[in-house]
Length: 323
Image (cartoon, rainbow, N blue to C red; front, side):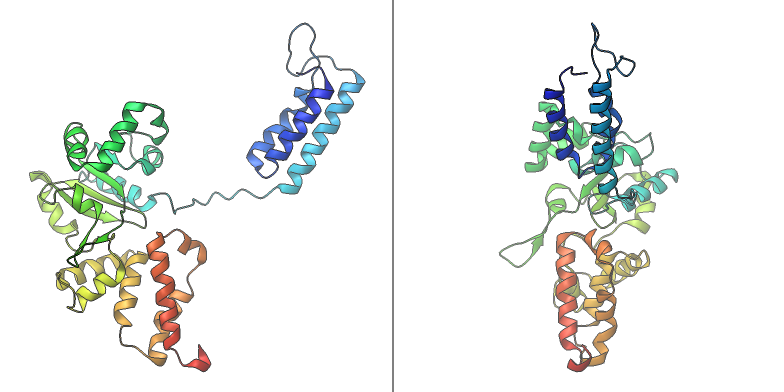
């Protein structure tokens, strides 16, 4: 409780200005602003300190201003998760598969997802870290080395800590000079040791191959459909223009479409619309045009860009008077 209004009121004014657009912070200001103007009697007392009429007037005034700002800025809380950062379907899938005994601890994950997975995965899953632990320099250094060196990742983390499940942010693929493509998962994880089994809008899951999960992997392993690659890459594979396994890809794409993954829907629309003109292009255009912008925001940048470019392409193919 500062004794001087001359000092406390300007400080409160600055604090209110800084927190006016953040309801969760302003709420505490509203609750405690009167107490901050409390008069000290020998030692600081919280609310029960006796106050003069002058102090009560200043406290009431400050409290009223804070409450007015809070009421003006108030927005009803929206508890909907901003999914563009969080692997919600991956966490749900890992939880389901772990209950059936197919996906096992321990878990290694890219730093982006540690806090979310820590909260949403079953307690039996030991995670490598929570991103908030970056204050520890040894962890920061190990993460940095693992991002740059596949040997460090495999020897110093995955093998050393007995990692059975790898949850990672879907990386970006790069086109090599010979025309082939490569992504970070291909470069860092040996396909003879690890198998891709699931992906959502931002993350993918790979599990360590063992004799116990060999039968299960025959059903769930994703051999061909790598979510890091651009959608048109898979269209070229399906059209036999790009090297790949079109039959296997078609099976995996069909399975992905059943769970309504937007990335797979985009591949399907592109594939079906390659040679379509006029009204034949309308269903694909309409599907992309009707997308909820909030839902599209949750997708990766590459997927958003391909969605918009495909929508524009199909729009150009529609009859001009109806476009």
